[in-house]
Image 1: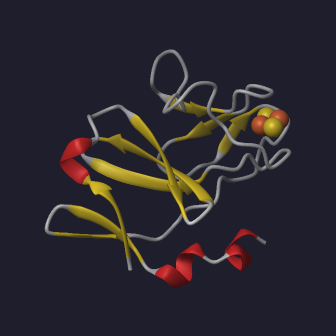
Image 2: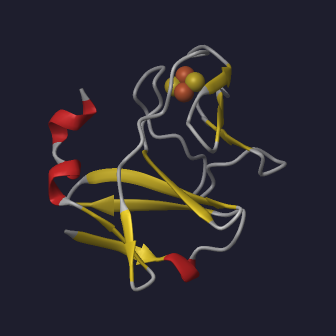
Length: 114
Ligand code: FES
């Protein structure tokens, strides 16, 4: 199990880039829910953010890829617009214990990226 961050440390409406053993993920907090994804655009596989922890569009309503501007729903990673429209960001399963966001090691293995 890997502890990623304390849920309380991520502000409402904010995003956080994460690196765990050379795997890159990011989290978004919306309506007090945490959404955790691989930091990998389904278009070309590039990281999404344009600056550190900047994963959202100007309104903070959607996740935005900085490379070609694809827009994704925060709740399910569904791409609504852009070159990978209809595809999904890949979610990372997690659980919360004592206010900490935790991921099983098995969910951080490279094969889950396939
Ligand atoms: S790499 Fe993300 S939209 Fe092209």
